[in-house]
Length: 35
Image 1 (cartoon, helix red, strand yellow):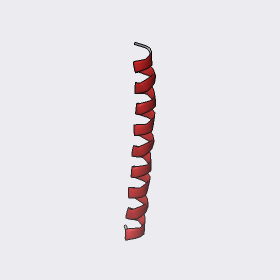
Image 2: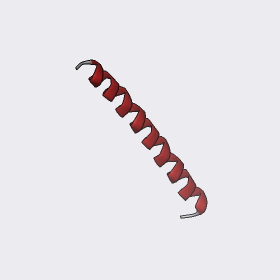
Image 3: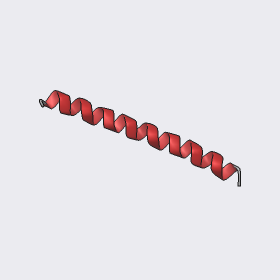
C-alpha cells in the first residue's frame, strides 16, 4: 500500500466519522425535543 492509498483511506474514515457525528447529533436533538 502506498502513501496515496493510505491518505485516501484516512480521508474516507474521517468523512464517515463526521457524517456519523452529524447523524447522532440530529437524532439526539430530536430525541431531546420529544421529552
